[in-house]
Image 1 (cartoon, rainbow, N blue to C red):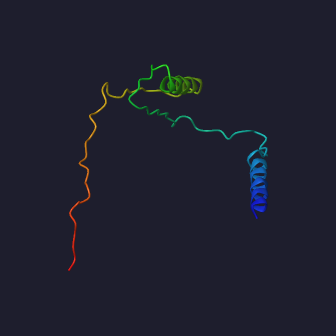
Image 2 (cartoon, one colour):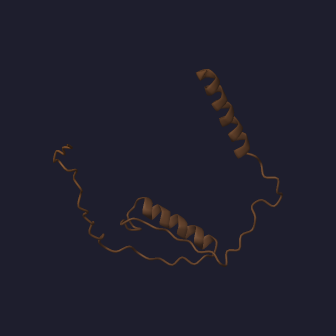
Image 3 (tube, rainbow, N blue to C red):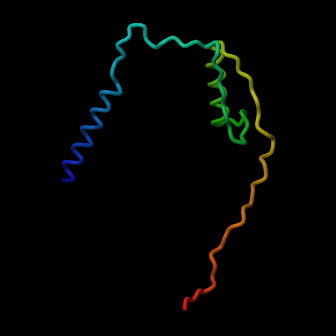
Length: 101
């Protein structure tokens, strides 16, 4: 039974590969997009866009794409210090023994 299920899963994965990699029938390629109304947003954590890591790489890639597509790229930075974490009281289970009569 396990071999039948495994064979069925392999068949489904191969079928999904062929469906996902199907050539587009359109001669013109990708559809044209109206970029006059388009805006791009990038949301980061408390890191800066000059952190020499993921935030900076994403920012530079988005900025380069926007410049190539003539899209305005306004920027905004997160606060310099993160907000203080909220401490919620934990509710502990009652340790009193309950007796029923």
